[in-house]
Amino acid sequence: MTTVRRRLAEIVYQVTALRNAPQAFEARYWRDFYRALLLGATRNAITRLLLVLLVFVGLVAPHARAQSHLDLVVAIDLTQSVAATGPDGRSDFQKNVEGVGKVLAQIPAGARLTIIGITDQSFSEPYLLMRAQVPDDPGYFGEKLTAARGEIVRAWERRSAELRPSFRQTDIFGALELASQILSQDQSANRRELVVFSDMRESVPFLDFERAKVVPEYRFVANKCGELSALKNTVVYLVGVDGAGKSAAYWESLHQFWREYFQDTGATLKTFTVLRDSPQEF
Image (tube, rainbow, N blue to C red; front, side):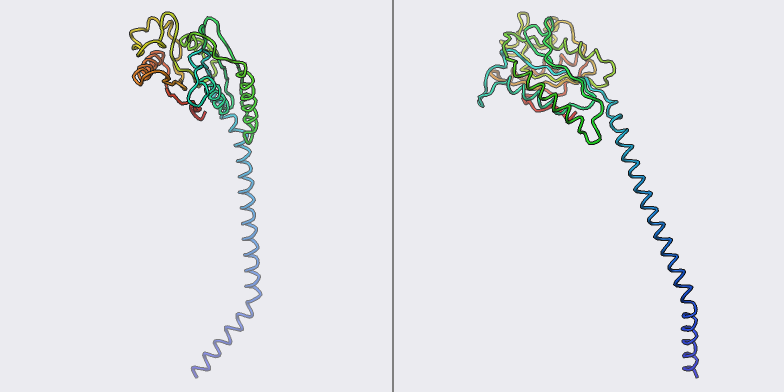
């Protein structure tokens, strides 16, 4: 009897399942249909959102970068003190010229550039070598900035081909004063940087570091350095400061002198090095 009842229950279940199959199939069909629609709409919404974000970044990012305006002055030594050749057969001057090119290849969008020469009368007879303004808009993929950098580097290559390290004395303080006046012209700039390619050996009649065994402390000769350059809030990089023909003690005294000098001007001396690599990623 139990077996018969169990069999009758199975038959009733199967009949009920068959009777409800069309409705169950329909329910599953519409469930899957609406799920697919929902997932498709979600994907489309995400895609549209990503496109909007990309357009927004493309439009806003260049403008945001342009808000950080850099006023950059590069000074290069054109005196005979950098004319000597090293073991590689190349002069310090040639290496400095290449170093300037590396800086120009990294200049950011919106930057204002001035290149000046360090001569025997750097301030009284300013030697402006090149000026350029980099466009604010780098382009969606940086293509405009790349093109601008390339043009500036090529212009420098043409200009530097005419230069020679021929001046007999080195007026570094005059170059710093000239740089400070150039940097003070653009009030919209919120970043001011000065890169100097030189051995930093001041050599004028009233102050001669070239012939000294060690450089005197700044406080002892401050009155001979002329008017203190207005370089407050300027970041300074001194590169190519080699110690050719001098002792390690001389190089350290030179470093100490310029560290104290720029501290007095309110500038930040970021780098003092014999190397000529581009000082930083702008």
